[in-house]
Length: 288
Length: 339
Image 1 (cartoon, helix red, strand yellow):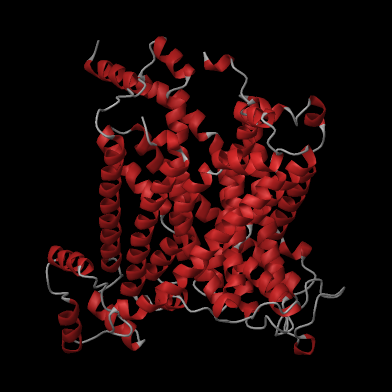
Image 2 (image 1 turned 60 degrees about the vertical axis):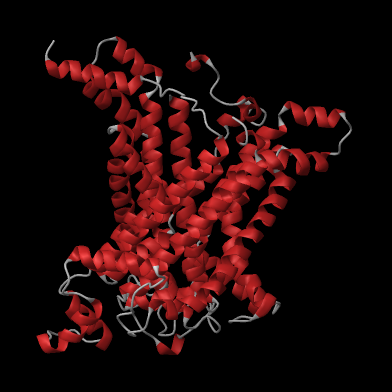
């Protein structure tokens, strides 16, 4: 059967001799260090922050990055580094909330599309495909215009608008698990449909979602910050990263670091999430 | 056996049964076209229905909400104040009639009336659509160029170059458009002064906005093209072309690219939608005319007809683009022409 064949196509082997597998993955270590820093900033911002994030000091307004103010200061003389550290919790919570909503919606839609009877499945599948093809930001903006701009709306809007992509993935996972050899084996052993579904199909289809969830957090933060950047999410007095970006835009010519650095932090977080997620995905595949 | 277990057995049977291939007899091309057109109509109907439902979903009494949105206040209204609104939007009709009115209006090209400005939505966005469309198409074109050059240079070379190639794909695909836009603006607009910073017209003005859209898209397409490209490099036809004495670059551009670019063709249909998302943000950064600015202020004011009008228009664009992509698909992959 297919299980006896080597999993990877031959051309991958060319670059991965056994020596390479033992080598430490620096990208993973960097990602874990950043993840730890982000987690620390979210849980105990006071430990990392060098300054009070709300302390105004107009004498120090719009200072470029220096030793006293690592990331510079904004138009009210507030320390940007400390504001970013204190904004971590809100940004992460929005990202995690949105990723959670996206994956729960994806699980429901994806399972129906994969397991329901043919008519229901094809209708749900069609809905998923259309929603997936539709611009996510437009979908999110449609939700924001119904519910009105607020952080909660932001979580729901980002979650719902990114769900279709994950729903496709869930559907594919369930379909491929459904046709796998071990399901056939379980059926040959006389196990019932629900038992096969609960014990074999769903666990195998859901496990890869751990990796996807990690990546989804990063993507959600990117999208949510986009909404804040457009002035349709968390409003500027907050130090959520997207709101910082939006606030910095006003003084982009005099103080470009006010938009450059929050954006860089968002990018680093997204890359951290992607790197860790990819690693989880690879190790799950190897473990099989 | 109990009835439940037999039904379970039937379900288990469905779980494992492989779908029959069922080759149907009829000219394949026209069947494909017909099913595409039917699919397109279904998509448009779905978008229109979603747009209608979104307008119904506005919290609270709709007439009050509309009047408050127009006046920028939040207060209770007397029936006398609401009467013209109810009349203008036909809010006293049954929901089904309102729905049919809306769909009928769309078929006549009437996208509705703005809550805020009390003008037809088409007047507000019609003339700006062209500018956004030019931006997204230029972005996609530029993404193709960047992707092809980068993948051809780095795919299937030594391990270091390949690692660099895919690392650049990953990083650029993750770049948030709002940040990339600002970065390009600061670097090319302010430091090097190559391009205008704000709202430049003509060819010069579109370079930075289009690049902002193109770079992440190129990375994204590059990720899937690279895998296909490297697979194609291992194919026997590459070896036979080499034996005929064809140069490496020639093989890559003539044979490998054709195979490798198939995933990118599929992605392009999707990208036309995705770049609209990016365009909304890019237009804000570069103060470029387009639907972005109208959309963002309409969303802030909860002016739903404008938002849903744009949604419907983008759905139309998406449908047209996908019919075109499907055509290109059959042209690049001759296997699809015959069954």
